[in-house]
Image 1 (tube, rainbow, N blue to C red):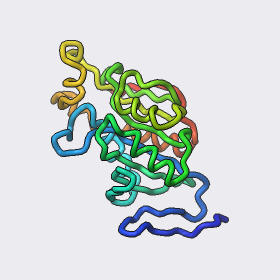
Image 2 (cartoon, helix red, strand yellow):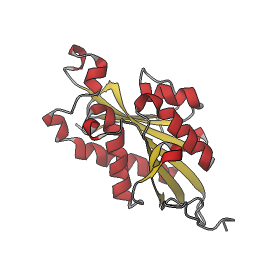
Image 3 (cartoon, rainbow, N blue to C red):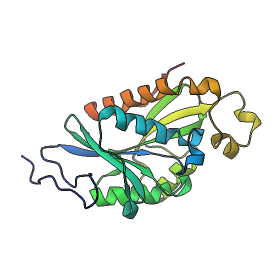
Image 4 (cartoon, helix red, strand yellow):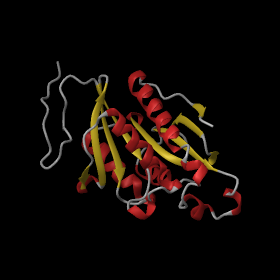
Length: 211
């Protein structure tokens, strides 16, 4: 039996401790705050995490100013899950992740980060534990604040016009009409991957293609 009873943070529905749960996992969606960034390639990490939170019946999102994040929480099987979206902008995402991980005493190996990946074609999802940044500013920030031993769920955003555009402009651009028609399938697949990981406690290096 767990030693701690469920407690609530003032003004929040996020529990400090939950009775009977074996472990805690932190899921991080990367993106930029603000409506002007909604629907951009760089915010697909937010979109995928929000779809997972909604499908899993987690708590409403709450603002955690001290942790520089929006936060939701819930359980999958025997796993307590904390989901965050940093409110720091992409290139300072590590500040929010470090603060949240320290507060809840979560190790890097218990963290999975969902983010866009310019080197992967749209329609592909790749997972891997650990690794470098591949030039992604959000991952660079995380690596400045913590060990690299966190999981990655990488959402491909590359298309035929990527080589013709500045990379920063491209990832901050909106998905095409055709790409938008596949986003629901994409977010469902990431939800399935995250659920499988939370149940099995394994994040293998693999590629899934939805197109």
